[in-house]
Length: 42
Image (cartoon, rainbow, N blue to C red; front, side, top):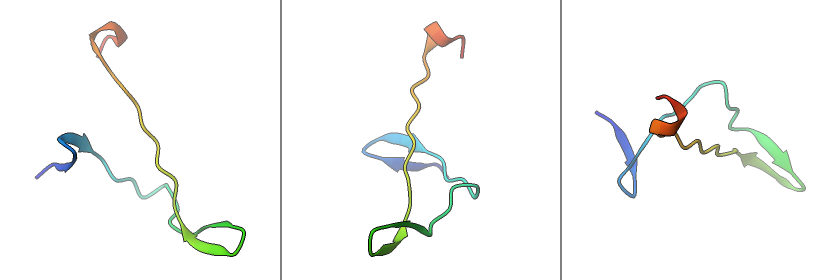
């Protein structure tokens, strides 16, 4: 099964920590987006 967000396939990775800190918040995580297309050779 593929996870989707608004019809866009997503992939989870264990190397991105879910315990980043910013100010008083400590239960934070980053999101990275990459766009691939035919022009990229993929």
